[in-house]
Length: 271
View 1 (cartoon, helix red, strand yellow):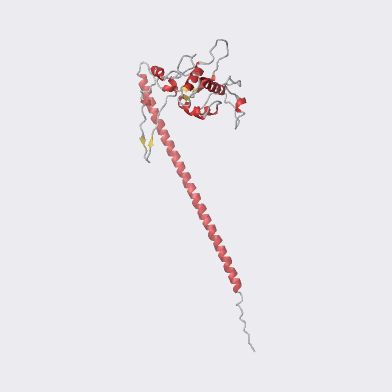
View 2 (tube, helix red, strand yellow):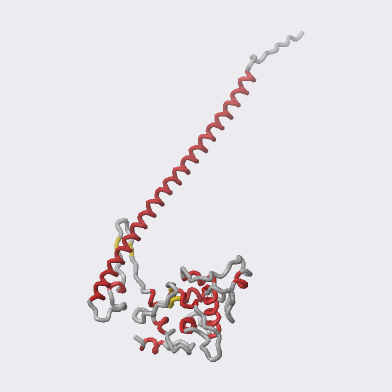
């Protein structure tokens, strides 16, 4: 006869194994959650620190800017005092404000440098708002329009012809004037609402030279070439200061009925 022995597993062992597995999963979840919280806190602290650093740098830059403005004010006050002692005061490039700027060392490293420019030595775009009234025998362009046409042709690159310069001049005039009647080669709302995105002509004096980029017939290349030679003043006429005007602007000075710019030699002879 054969005898059989059966061994029984202790009761409860499978339950303990299951509980141990569940505890391990819970521990892993808690660890993952803690890791995520630590990473989130680190990112938030990094953002907080960066925001604080940005605020500090902005305040520092603003302080440097105010310092530069104070230096400019002192230079202009010195120029004003010097002009009072002149028989015929004028602004020219020999005065203290127009000298080569001196770099100022900053405490944290780096340099601050700036310069002053006489915007009266640049062409005033807002002078193009006035157009001539068509009449037989009358000039086709105002003196300001004729000067701007010459200035556009005086650009070195890109080189513009007379007709292209006239088209840009009339488009700028339409951008500035209050009516909705386009000039021969100009543009008003009917043109601008057809662009993508659509917009309208300002029909007011320019507040910034950068508005030129929105004007019809203007290209990025022409704008970059023209921007150093123009400014925006109130619409009231302001005479050009030939003593601070660069050579390109001086070439735009000619007889009112003449649309061609002066040669470089002729412009140099003006001063």
